[in-house]
Figure 1 (cartoon, rainbow, N blue to C red):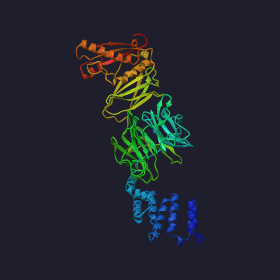
Figure 2: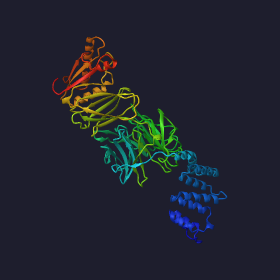
Figure 3: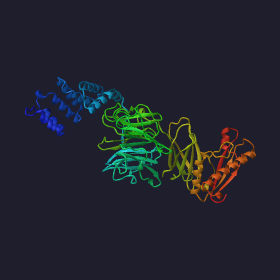
Figure 4: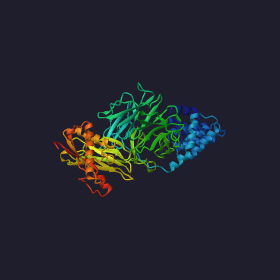
Amino acid sequence: MKKPANTSIVLEDCLKLFQNEKWSETLDCMDQIPDSSQHQAYFDLKGTALMRLGRIKEGITAYRRAIDQDVKHENPYLYFKYGESLWRDHQFLQSGKAMKVYLKSVENPQPTVRAKAEHYIRSSSVADSLYRIPREFNPVLLSDSLNTANDELGISMTYDRRNLILTRRSDQEDLYQSQLRQGSWVKATPIHSLNTPDNEGAASLSGDGNLLVFTACNRPGGLGSCDLYFSAKNEAGWSKPKLLPGVNSRYWDSQPTLSSDGRALIFSSERPGGHGKKDLWLTVQSETGWIQPINLGPSINSPGNEENPFLHSDEFTLYFTSDYWPGFGGRDLFMAHRIRGNEWSLPQNLGYPINSIENEEGVFIESSGQKGFLSSARAGQFDLYSFEMDRAIRPRPALMYEMIVVDSTSNLPLKRVSINIYDWTSDRLIRSVYTDPEGYAAFLISGDREYGITLTHEGYSFLSYKRQMENEINHDIKDTIRLVPVSESKSIILENVHFASGEARLLKASSVELDQLVEYLILNRTLKISLTGHTDNVGQPDDNLTLSQARADTVKAYLVEHGIDSDRVKAIGMGETQPVVSNNTPEGRQKNRRTEIIIQRDGY
């Protein structure tokens, strides 16, 4: 109920309360001013106090009355305030109109005010259309294994979704790590080898988890106000961090995001040569190191600030924040797609309510593209949340081949199994990894490709096989791999050892599997092997016998050259005498052309 008018109270009394940030007391004071004294300045101050209290609709009404009282148009800034209040009420089109009136009424507005007004005008139709069709967005607070009473500010995860790094702020910012075990994240622990008494944060993991790039500011030996540092995963944990060579500048460099293979890096920087204030830049690892960073160009970078980049595991979809491109008024989240090289599509606003009228932070989206993660202070402090990605803003899924390696007898998982994965289609080694305590390992896959996979573990038989992917794959693939103890092993085909046609010359890619066989024999020093070479039935039997012996000898020579005692390897050529299938088809003949090993503990 409105208090009785008090003629002794004047607007200046209420203004003093407002200047002391006593918003409710300001309104109580104004309620006592007689109607006859309620002019333009009265409704201007009332509108501002109401907006500070979040009473937006009442604030809009007060500003409208102030404009109506300004019959001589002496205070055009009222239209800016009115427009901002309409924007906060999601009346975006009406807000844009008010901002246009403001800019037409003022010859030389303050640059920051002009920039804001122009942003509202530029964004009004986009914000209105996105607000009318909201995205699916239901953030869920992550467990207390990751969230604490302190602020959790960001997250990065390996593409197998089993290892993560987060930034936590208490008295300072530090890096923490956690692993997924039996479907739940274990309690995050500090990374002592990386953390210092200063701040470390804004970290990015490579998809395979072997490389970490993070931001540190004002460090001795640094180049700019903030710099990018890197650390590599090793047997003991994380290596001592070093400045990322050839990338940092004398300016602010921060917020890195690594590609899945760790060979490309996008980051935000204030260095000169860009299109605005903070721009996104790209560098790529060459044979000689990281190349000179290149700007992502005007498709991505604006006259404003582009920050918080995240490159998805598909290596084509980029998410970032911008305070310039059309959005909801603050710093919004956008996505863009890489067309080729460093050519990008125009940004797409992620929509409402992922974006709000406040400033947004960055997102992380797991490799499947179905779940996202963000840090938000919606509950009063910054915590980590997960959310299901709306289909309209999902990246292309980066699909995985997942392996659980177990003992063939007990079916118990085997940890620290060494696995090499070779992409025969692109002729390159794509990952070397060890299984975790649950016997798990994974790598990213693409359709219409053939992968060669080799597994070794002390006390178990060497295992080699191939996996041909279909032309189109739309889900993760999971296999259980059973390693056979050496005592039970039989003949093993080296599926990824190949020769030039009709020759005993090894193809270059065969070295990946043979190197792992060398490591296996070094690890299992009591073992001896018999190597047998086999051919199909094309040609003369005597010629095939000679070729098979030459190929077996070539493999033996490779092993010996790489440190294996000659007495531990016996090479035998069997020619075409032991086919495993019929030679009547090309596929059958291919299977019969093979190199096999038999593993024995004592003698041959």
